[in-house]
Amino acid sequence: MNKGIFSKTFPTQSVDENFQLIHALGYQGTQFNFSSAGLNALPHFIPDSVLEEVKQASQRHRVCLEAISATFNMTHPDSRVIKQGLISLETVCEAAGRLNCPVVTLCTGSRDPDDQWRFHPDNLQPESWKLLQKTMENALKVAEKHDVVLGIEPELANVVNSSMKARQLIDEMQSRFLKVILDPANLFEIATLHEQHSLVAEAFDLLADEIAIAHAKDRNPDGTFTTAGRGVLDYHFYLQQLRHSGFTGCVVTHGLEPEDAAEVSLMLDKHLKLLEGSVA
Image (cartoon, rainbow, N blue to C red; front, side, top):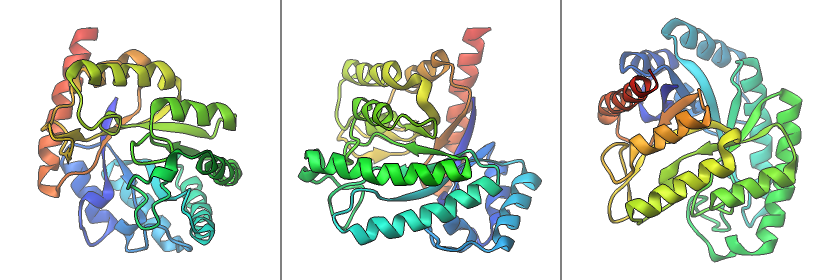
């Protein structure tokens, strides 16, 4: 396993500066956002010059493009928002294909009209699941066209709000282009250590073979999010489960301040080295 960080963590002036900083802090990869190249996060057009800039910076600073963000609200109550999201998804998937980036990340969405990361009670209705299925079918046609994987992330506030729901959607879609982004901090808010371990273990039981990217953030005791390594998440248990599942990809941190990136890099190194030692 290696480690990465969201490019948008850093408010840099260029992609080259961004990737140089990522490398200097000890990260080998990034989940890229086109806002780091001065574009909209969901662009409808990406100039060839920007793609070349990203490609050159990746090679120069040895920062692997592990994924590119194309998150939009796939179950928004306004169908026009979904339509625009799919147009941007086509643009990002084409770019990912040209950059040899294997994964494009999605958000299964919320029926909340203002915030795709905020829970809405209608998320639990059968109609919302049907809408997600329809949107995902269209998204997967785009992914297949450009030969990239789409990654969905179980999140409590979204329509796919559990490992079980992620498993259900994957089984229903029956597509090799649909995989999972696993972030255990999104599986609970407040939980005992035993409950946390049970939820994380269940996620691996259901999804071990489907994990494209692993995420790293944390929860405070009151359920709010915090920087990876500063909260209640048992990182040794989580990374051990990743190792035992056969995952050899990237653990990507996010939800942190730029000044905390060095601390998280060292924390992940410590745990990954402990795991290597236990295997040896």
